[in-house]
Length: 470
Ligand code: BG6
Image (cartoon, rainbow, N blue to C red; front, side):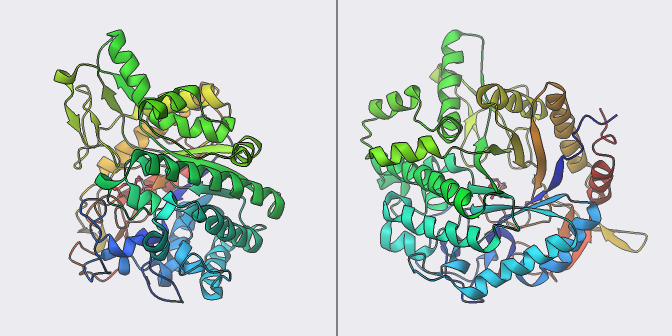
């Protein structure tokens, strides 16, 4: 018997810069991703360089129809993609949008509609127009709020009747850890003042509220969600100091849900800002905007959990999603060192539901792994049992959370088709049900092949989760 609601939105997730390619086609302007050939691992380059896999990515810009047909073959109910801001406003600060860019997403939506797939659209996913970064220092500058609002209004006016589910900013809390990628901030992280960093976050939060307000005016049937990078933080030991340390670390992420859902800065967040000597400029008008335009639902990514301890001598730190965390000795890790914790997903779902009482949408979860393309019965494929196990175990925990009474709207696996990874800009870190023949050195035919997990996920969707192995 399936525990998943009948209208559960099964699907997959992507982001424009990681799939589209065509980085300067159709009037598109440059984005920060064009000067980040190696993700967050090295400083930005002054100009775009040819070693940037994202210039072609997996060429979704030209192959979207075939790719969406493959998603439909798996039975996707929803497809999460993002709109490249610099396709719509090539510089970011113009007054008129680029019609060719808008028309591209019309065509993507046509394909979704043809297959009965509900689009789930991220307005800004790690690709601030480069001009806004270089001229304004990205989200540090208050002017970005207006540019983003104009962009969001254009999207709601154009697609508001076709797109029901919108996310304002991908993983908004990651600005604190990846100021360039997440906040379009040109000042190098080690030279950025805390006040500027938190002001950038504040500006994004205000922009998110303004987008929500605009959606209510221009697309009344739309639902707007925030998107948070979730990473549950467990105390390394039962020592109360460790428990408090874990809570304090976890609140650096939870604050963003608190603000989006409750419409105000929580006391613990204000205390932490004042202890860090941060002086934010917040107007009364902005306070009112935050309060009056809270989100309809909360979406989040989930890949890893971490631990925390107050005892410096026990802080053994390892990689997490975009920021590190204390290793949990009870867990195994992926090839990239991200610790795998299916139960953590049930914990997050329960915690978020208890805390916010808003419907939850898991919009990213998946395993980045080095896949081996093999030939079986004359067909090229990948026998990715490890991915099946990872996804199965996480989905079982989603089912448990549903049984716990948590309201879960849907689940979109990250990188339903292989794409360029965000943190390290590699193609060899593969997440997809569909293998894309392209390698880290840029070679490859770009042909698509179904992995073993393709049929597995199709059956999970067809059976509404009943086929999962408990
Ligand atoms: C999330 C991002 O942080 O994690 C995605 O929203 C990203 O853009 C995903 O791709 C997985 O991270 P990575 O670095 O493995 O691509």
